[in-house]
Length: 213
Ligand code: GAR
Image 1 (cartoon, rainbow, N blue to C red):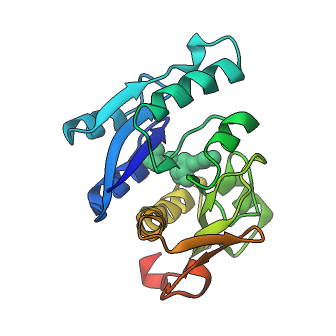
Image 2 (cartoon, rainbow, N blue to C red):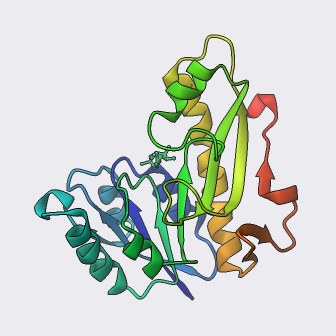
Image 3 (cartoon, rainbow, N blue to C red):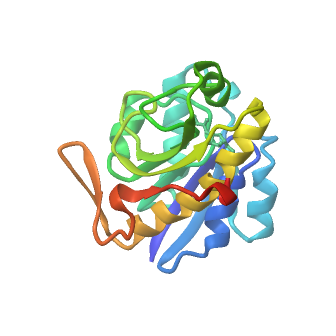
């Protein structure tokens, strides 16, 4: 049984999608938030998952917070640590400690639109396709080997909320899929590129039909 710790900062709908997927061979050992008000904590607790808050505002600097966070995570001896809307930049030491077992979901087709406000920036750039990416975390922000991506169209008349909602539907599909592949031991990284053994989709791409969008 693989032990998974999920980190959240807010609503936690991606964490919820992973919990609801009930992935065989995986156990969600804990959900940890850096914000006491994170809505997702209640969902996790109601599913008998251990919850914890490591409030970043209580620490003098980033390194002190990351040390405390790692201690909280490591009490659960995780095989995989999942950043599900965890809105903190992590130190290189933290990332190194979890190398190869730390994944993140980012609301864009990386390497486009790293950082914040991805949907607004996609609209401003006039891109015709947008999407979301699950990737291994490396020291550089929103970089690292890409495990799976989903593409959505950008429609005439989209505003930020409409585009975000369309992307979120796909996030809830690809994130549990990525976790499942890792739990099954099918994901490897060669020369900085992630490969999924036996994946039915080329390069782990989910491109929904327009009706899905
Ligand atoms: C998701 O859209 C996720 O991709 C994004 O935050 C949202 C969290 O929603 N993550 C980032 O922007 C990380 N840089 P959720 O709390 O409902 O899962």
